[in-house]
Image (cartoon, rainbow, N blue to C red):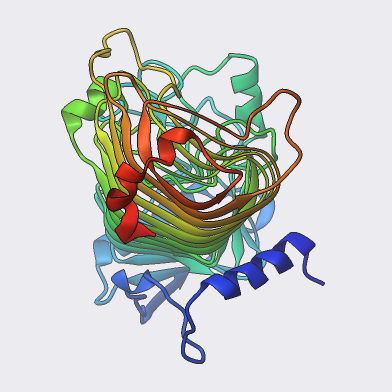
Length: 445
């Protein structure tokens, strides 16, 4: 039997969605075609042992070395048979498929003493948590292309609890590792894999283009710190679809660099599609920010099913960020049990150091949110722009957010914002009901 909230979402979604031909499913995944690899090798060929105790680092590195240097025509598939393969971090190479069989688990070691440390990302200037470098991601790709991580819903397990405890006890030497990260890469597919207990962010494509993440499951405890699901960062042409995410932080968060470092690097995130995502988090379902100093534009998110959320939709920035957030469209959302339905904020997130420019104000404009249904939502929303950089072109339509309000709370709070609203309940702030703004939003309603 379907959970009640999912049943309601499916019914609501069917009412909102245009009819499709039989068997047709709207998808953006065609931006990176799946490659067939005629050359196949197994981790067992390189001494891999899936007993959950044997360290397989040498096996993974030897297998990938073979792929990199033999350069078989059409690339090579590295097969991971059923079993639990304990390993340290390893790097992927171009023209390869990492294929996890059913019941195959690639499990990270929990000893951080030998974990490699790499330079910080130039758009961040330092580790996101600690000054200096950062621990390399568990599975890492730098400057690669034509890479696929897929299989029969095998598992990549970061065993993150030791890292979470170091964060809680303030004993981290460097920023925690992501579970999977691609840097300066293109034509990447991640599909049909479960990601479990990441030390930090789960899937982080940064400075990338043509990335597809589809049919993945991402799980981490609700109290696990900073375990974002999928974070496209200073990247373009990214397709995220048909996935379930339940973690301790934002399910999907679009980013583009941090304060003065992101401004100087100047690479934006754009042409991002997020579709048919469901999940749960104490933070946001879909977020933009708060690190948006390179700019974020042309983000399209639709058909989202969110349950037990902190905030359903969260667009967040801060003074010192600079950059822009524009041309964002989010539609066809069902949320149940959320502290807040919608939040657009100018006061979110910390700074890398004291060198940020307080006069670097973000530009937030042309945000369309429509066809949203929420039940048991404690507060409908808040939109706080900046006095010297108001948020403009905020267009809300066909939004119904119902729930029991907290004592002495109001459904909407707003400042330094302009836009328009149509068929929004509870009725939003007066700043969004001006008839003078209707023309700006008429094409979006």
